[in-house]
Image (tube, one colour):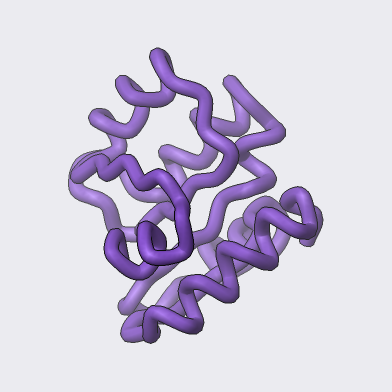
Length: 109
């Protein structure tokens, strides 16, 4: 995923947990985020809720990814609050296209 985005010229910053992501968000401004629904520690949904409280512009530019089936509440949350969703496994071109659309649309779903 990192290489697919870097090859398009994007700067990529990785966080292996919601807690690390929040630390990064406290010190750096980002134009978009890709959140795994099933992050270690707090879930991607919980992380998104915290982002929503801090920076609604960024929260509207979050792309969720997951390889696990989503319950109804998670599906509803993602469809109303996130810029998009990709189901794993996905290819580099699919990811690149989703990020391109997210940035072009300004996070409007």
